[in-house]
Every structure is written in structure tokens, then in C-alpha cells.
Length: 268
Image (cartoon, rainbow, N blue to C red; front, top):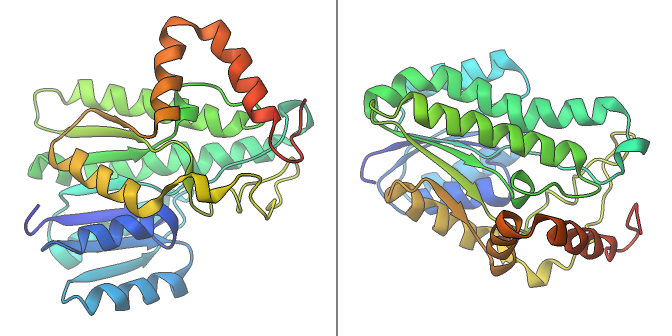
């Protein structure tokens, strides 16, 4: 991964921030994208202290022109793109019957359309470099998670988009990775939306029992280097994907019971 240009969305916190620092441990040039410019600038300073080249671009991935600008700024600064990591994402926690449709729409705009927009504008450069497109997805993209209708729908859509992209470019050298970290100790649950689209605040899960963002970042970097098709992390995540292939009905009940145990679960 020497002298690669890495573009990371959702880089201001969680897995995105960890990925930026992970890639900065090698001779890479990093492009950071997120809505919070203050956090991006702090991260940029941290990376520059390591002697690395870094560019921060304020980006709301749900806005097409922001995504176009991100890619153009990356090319202006570094002349190429080798890896695009579509990491920006939001979650939700509410029953579909109680949720306002704007909540579902917002999740699709960020999680799905954000991936589509960034990939669309980066694709010509990635084909030229025979680079990698990464979608940081979720087990929720393999199995519908109750109380996360919009989240699972957006991740299922991301999977379909990226799989098709891979097949369309099978003979062009494009690498596509779908990475599913499983439950990770990040702030995505703290910023998850409730049924009205407001931030729910405190996470309902025990963060101490989850994989850290730093661990996830290391696995993703290695998977990109090996040009893997998919990456599923944690025993729980791998078991869920396996059981869903052979015993989907049984897994429905298991998932329901597991998610119902969350504090203040919207269903029982």
C-alpha cells in the first residue's frame, strides 16, 4: 500500500477515524471527508504530525454535489485515487409502524446514496488505478434487524449496488470489498435516529463487549490489501450470516429475542 491515495468518508469519528490513522501508519496520502470540519481538522493535524500528506474536505454524502466536490478536490490535490472507503453512515432505532418516512429516507440518503454518489464520481479514477471500492456495511445488510428497518434496507441496497459494480467491472481490474464489522464500539448508536428523526443519545448496548474501531480498521486495511470480496467480523456476525443461509426461520426468532433484550427496546 505504498504511495496510495485513500479517500475515507465519515472520517471524523469511529471506524472512519480509525481507518485514517491506520492508513497513515504507511506511506499513504489520506483524504478525509465528513460534515464536522472541526473534527476533520484535528485529525488532519494528528496525521500531519506523522509526516503524512492529508486533505480534509467538508462533505455531506447525502448531497450529490458534495460528493462530486470531494472527488474533484482529491484529484486536484493528489492526481489519483487508489482506494475509496464508503464509511459514512447513520442508524436508527424504532419500529417501522411508528417511524416517520423521513427517517427511512434520511438513512437511504446517507448510507445508500452516499455510497452511490461517491463511487460514481470516483469510478473513472479507480478504474485507471485498478483500485478498490469499499463499502463499510453491517450484518444488517445480510439479515433484517428489527427496530432498524431503514438501516437494514440501506445496507441491503448497498450490497446489491456493490455486487453489481463488481460484476460489471470484472474484467477491468476493479476491486470491490463489502465489509461487515458486526457490533462495533463506535458512536453510530449514540447518533442513531428515533422514530421522529431525532438523535436517540445514549447507546442501548454494552460497548465494552464489542470490537473496537481500531481493530475493525486493521481488518479492513488487510482485506483491501488482499483484495478480498467480503469481510465479516466477530463470531456473532459470522454465525448470523451462516445461520441465515441454512436456517433463516430459526434465525428470525433468535434475532427478535436478542434485539428485544435491549434496554427500552421498541418491541418485546
